[in-house]
Image (cartoon, rainbow, N blue to C red; front, top):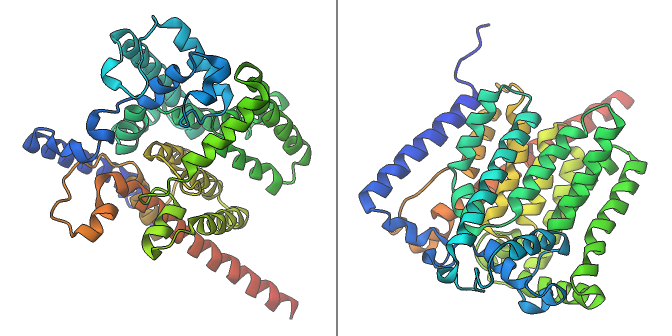
Length: 400
């Protein structure tokens, strides 16, 4: 039987390209006015997940007391401290994007350029495809709402974590012991930057690689706690967790399961919904046969399980995206998967004023990626549960 040339990957490309062309036309028609409802703070808070943290770390021992928004683990503050020492004094001003100097902006441009090169390399290694394929995927990701209005506009270090996890996923598939050890270290470093990547340790538990799991735990503890020696010691540890509690208390919007639950039910018990989702996602990760589905649930736990989740976290979905498209898929359901992956990485710029007010939060450009993630969760949970139930029935029939 002749294979159709219209593959799920081609559908993904067409959707991404079509959305980009449409969005460019909207930008031309509105002269960019529609960006006011998409860019954080109407453009007055630009890049501040980068520059604010450079400001916080001016006094390293008191970084966690500088602001409740100093909420990153200390490992990443080593990088921000390096940048702070490289810049002239007062190149950045806390919570004031307009006072960011040209020197600081130039540093940010160089920083983003270097990370983009590493992103391309990580995609190339994990995807096992040609340079042209990897470059094309990288460009499409860079032209997405997630990358432009999340990762770049916020300046968050989530992109670093995404790159490290992609390298870890590729290295752990190799046979050499040194490569596997490097994978453990990269996952531990990722967790030392963002905490949430610790969920990737579930892969080792599911595969019963107990010794590696133990070393991963040891590496993780080191990369998380050791840097506190430079950033406040034990008082810094306690203040870090206080700041985290304050940040996680913001459960507005639909960015996380907890926030969505509160919005839909009118209650304030989103924590329970988040815990339930975390357990379901972990079980689904165990049930899933395909590596990309396991990676999806692990990445999803980092994106929508936290009580507060910024739009930049969708960048973690690059990991299952690359794992999915590196293999050939032609079943009907694969076209749905491709459609939803496109939803996570569309360049979608438009005004939603004609949409009913109750639906605007769900259909706004900044919400499309999250809705695609929620729908992908439901779809994979349903298909994997059905597959698991069929297998259980067959086993029972075999016994009888």
